[in-house]
Image (cartoon, rainbow, N blue to C red; front, side):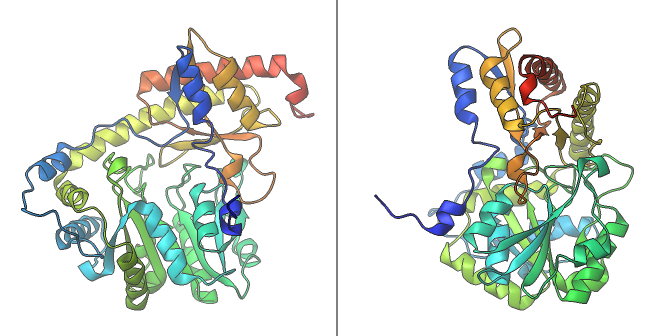
Length: 406
């Protein structure tokens, strides 16, 4: 038998995708499955992307530069300028999605067994990236009851030790939908300066904020511009997940030179997808306004339904298109398995993501699920009705699986 590395053994299976076989089995039985487990938007990708690729003609489809095509990096720089951030093209490197950007940031910043502080629950693949880089996640627990906002300066500072290299967080947050306040961001800036830390800011959901103010970037805090690494992607902003075009941006030249060496090892990001991504800068503002209103309507449907479910705890998400809900059950994954395999309404059922895999602290999130409201309003409404009735049935049928205080 092939010997597997400790690194490979330590990596978790994705809670977002691990129950897909159950969904496929339900479909084979003739059931329709509403996928609230994955952040796959159903919004149409702007035609500009496909048109640019269709009209691109060269005699040879050659390697792109390892740092990305100049036209693509200029396009990203122009986008950030529209959002009050100035980048030269050599301060931007195009990556294979935001995922590669996060992995490369960890590899460039951290040695084996170095630590990063991450507010939990967090995007589950942070666990995978940390495992691949031999980096330890020091989890900073946030709670549904508090809207998943950060604890105090002192509580975060207690997590810092000589091996701490960075603070990694998404803003707006996946999987919580939290949008951090200016006060929280300034607090993290103070901590980064005091303890010589880097802030890895995963800002792929920047356009999806449902409050009265836009989401602020960590790059807009002048005093820490030299210690911010920004990760971004076109996947969610333009509903172009399959293109796998992301980026890493930093004002630190040595850091960027190090990331470039990693990029040279994988040669380049696909050329045609970069051509399509570069054209997206011409997407009109009305596109984002329409998309935001659509997601706001979906959020309202999902949050309203959760608020009506007895024993469920959640706070209204302010950004991205996810919500974490604490359920009146002992095991959220067991409920999800029941819902997809043993429950339906008129041959329709719903797949959720168990939330335990979005935590690093053992035992946390076991009674929670993450819901992605990426489906159209009417489908979200049907999916949540199924969840509501399924939860009632589960609680009635399996009282032994309820918490003692439920």
